[in-house]
Amino acid sequence: MLGVAVPTIAQSPSAEFRRLDTNMDGRLTGAELQSIPLQLKKQLDRNDDGEISSAEDIQHQVQSLSPSKQNVNYAENTNPRQTLDIWSANNLKPRTRLPIVVWIHGGAWRSGNKRQVHETFKRFVLTRRYVGVSINYRLSQEARWPAQLHDCKAAIRWIQANAITFNGDAKRVIVMGSSAGGHLVSMLTTTTGDRSSEGTVGSEGGDKATVIGGINLYGPTDFLRMNDFPSIIDHDAPNSPESQLIGAPIQSRPELVNLANPIKFVDVTDPPLLLVHGTDDKLVCFNQSELLHHAIRAAGGRSTLLTISKGGHGGFITPKITSSIMSFGDYLIGEKKKLPVDSTLPGKRTP
Image (cartoon, rainbow, N blue to C red):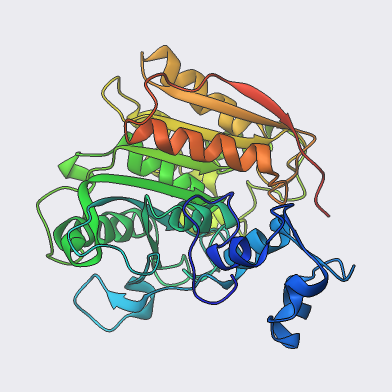
């Protein structure tokens, strides 16, 4: 971002870029570059071609965005794993009430943190039509399932209770996450409003956490079937991420595993879910999203599957994929009337 300006829409160059682009050709060249400090110019000129394109300016905005408030504890304790960050654009009007996008990080439930947010999450915030929250949750070395779900529920209750303090709309909360975070998104959408799954973490808010929809990026669904397809992980092994989460080899405790399977909680009243998954994912096979998608549809629920052809375990975000994800968000908040249809977009393999 040039200066501190925030774009009106995520795909738009900053106000400062537009001001400097006197011939309005989408590039800053020659005299248009003279007022930009040398160090910033080097950061913006990503391909080192001596000019700055609107695409380079947009990417710089995304990379430069940081939390507006950090390390807020949602559990009324001092555990850093039960904290959240708030993300918002600059200079929002005081009485603005915007939909809230909640980011849930991945890391196989045993690593990662709330600062590892997805580029598309930042783009939601940069539109100035959403505010964002990224959350930590206890990892499997500290607590077994369903502690992770209980933490996420507590975080959402805190968000709903305090939304007014950061321009958020408590009634329009969307959850979004990748990998293990995607799994938690699916659990949150299929158990939304279910008091029995709330846990006892924290005391903020009402007696149940509710969301209006979710965006699951390549998260697992049915742990017991993860070895049905080729993977670089033996998911049935005692030291697999799934076994560590449950606290036992998963095939030996199917009753516990079912408590972490969103399919077991699918209901026609569940909010809509977008599933984004690469067909060549070797950590969480593509079939995991297919299983959940078909289960939701069979129950009469609303689900959209965005297939990333030859995509791996992430690393395939392109403008069309980003646009599709954000379009689903706009559907959730009522700005689009029809549920986006299933579709396939090209991706690329990740190492």
